[in-house]
Length: 86
Image 1 (tube, rainbow, N blue to C red):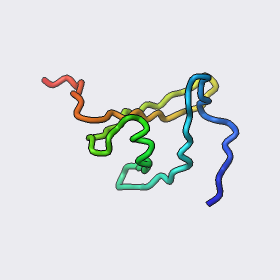
Image 2: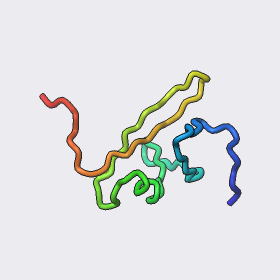
Image 3: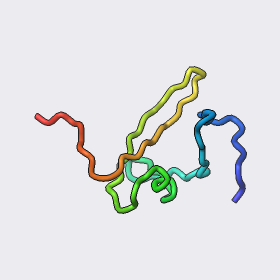
């Protein structure tokens, strides 16, 4: 498998940040959705236990230079939902 060199990072790490590249992932079709498989080390590196109920907060970010970035933020464990229930 050939490693691609990405010279223009979508979001360059800041001086005090550490960035780990987990490489390209295939986007699979599942009915009317698209799925991406995340490596376990990416989730455990965020502080999630693999025994936790792991959910993802998904945001689409548009930068000033016109790039669009999908940001996935794990929500680990049993956390309260903040939805209004009537």
